[in-house]
Figure 1 (cartoon, helix red, strand yellow):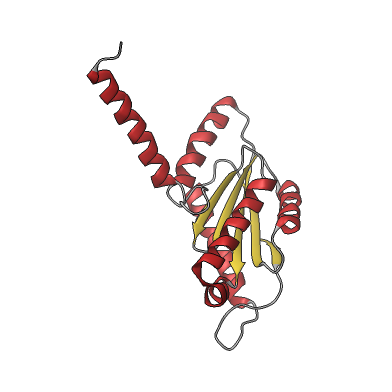
Figure 2 (cartoon, rainbow, N blue to C red; figure 1 turned 135 degrees about the vertical axis):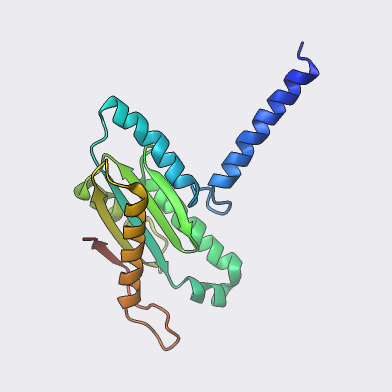
Length: 186
């Protein structure tokens, strides 16, 4: 029979796990968030490096276009449905070992371990085929050496995708227009 101290310890442990999950997960999409992605990446890749099976990784930045228009047209609930649908598309085409993240409002990241540009392009093609109709996007991807700085690489990829998005055609209100684009980043 469990005593009160054991139950309290068990409850405290469960509460701590729940709080960690909430702190590292986006509540809308149930994907990792900015805080959770680097932690999860470090935990997984440390094990892969130790076993000598970590060759490279590809970061895919996926930025939805037109979320502001959706908010204006359908309200936040409508835009949230698009975000959840995009997140589900990413989850559907990725492997269990890939790390999906809602990085910011309309930006998602996908980190594919032991995946080169060719493998990343295949997954991106599947993402394109599984997105809801009329969702426009910018997708940029780049493959990195396993011993390069993950944090610096995240900054590089997200900065480059923002630059690409800024260079896209815009309407009179400064909103990006046009079809989706996929770019291999330099």
